[in-house]
Image (tube, rainbow, N blue to C red; front, side, top):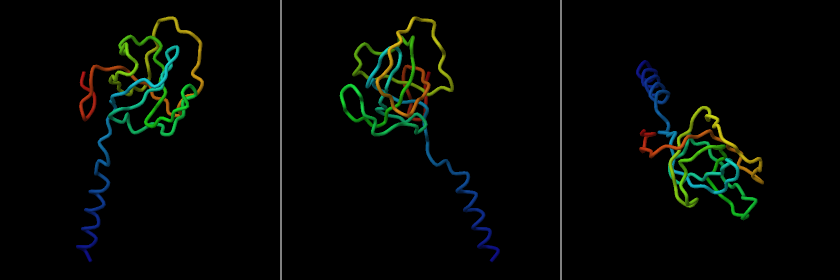
Length: 130
C-alpha cells in the first residue's frame, strides 16, 4: 500500500512539474489587412502564446482566415514593402506609442484576438533572438 501511494505521489509530482508545451512568444507573420496603423496579421510559423483567432472573415475580400490576430503599430517602419512578404514579431506586454501622425480610418472588421507586438529581425524555434 505504501508503494502504491509513493508511486502515485511521484507520478503526480511529475505531471505537475511537466512543461505541457514549449510555447514561443515569437512568430513569422504576414499582413492580411491594414489601414492607418491597424493590422490583421496571420501567423505563418510560431504561435505567440497560442492566442490566435480561427475562422475570421475579411470584410474586404470575404475570405476566411485562420491563425490571425489584430494589432496596432502606427509608426512601424520595419515592415516589408511587399505586403505578401513575411516578417517576424514578438509578443510584448504593452506596445510603445510612437510619435507620428496617423489617419483615423478603421478596419471594417477585426479578429477577436488582439496582441501587442514588436517587429524583430528573426526568431529561433524556442523564442526570440535579438
